[in-house]
Length: 201
Ligand SMILES: Cc1cc2nc3c(=O)[nH]c(=O)nc-3n(C[C@H](O)[C@H](O)[C@H](O)COP(=O)(O)O)c2cc1C
Image 1 (cartoon, protein in one colour):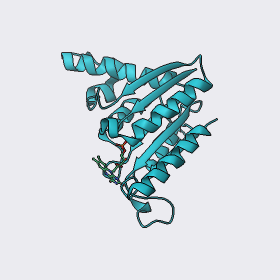
Image 2 (cartoon, rainbow, N blue to C red):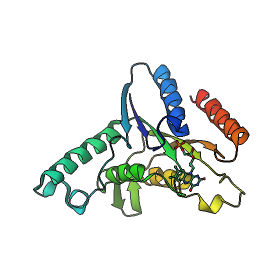
Image 3 (cartoon, rainbow, N blue to C red):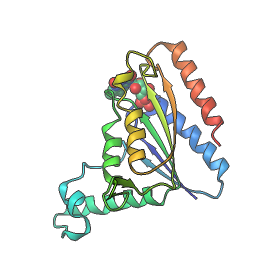
Image 4 (cartoon, rainbow, N blue to C red):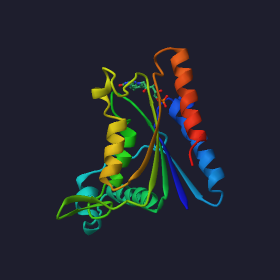
């Protein structure tokens, strides 16, 4: 059993998503005491945007510059971490209607044709069916079903879509939204998310 925990909020100690993923990580560790636990802070150790060399040619191209060698080695490590993880815990705040670019850079490293998805007769076929993904979503506004902002949710819907594209069927999204709507709404949202984390089974 391997647990991969990612954080992508830039707000440091004030971060709501970081505080929630920390609680969720403790919950998972207590449920799986023998699990190997890997933590990656995508802000403190930001991944470079990949280049065409890594994405298109992969192993087949000679890595010439030190930057290419470094990018390729780290990209392989990121991919291996994801491939070997049974549970992936992701802190995914909404920034500018989508996810932080640091998280997007990580996603770009794990969506790899021929590895995490393949094109078959029916189109793209995800290869990551055995994994469980838990997403801690935080956002200042409210984007739930029926709200006027719902069409602007390119964060949770994107996260569900990209892991679905990779074939992950077991995706849990825990949301704390309305964080910027005043202290009462924020407190209720965070309490709701904590309760959902406590019920993770
Ligand atoms: C750079 C930035 C962009 C943001 N963009 C949005 C946004 O588009 N919609 C929204 O509802 N909240 C937005 N917010 C508010 C955050 O989603 C909210 O503060 C949430 O708690 C962020 O998670 P964090 O506390 O873990 O950083 C933004 C916050 C920051 C810092």
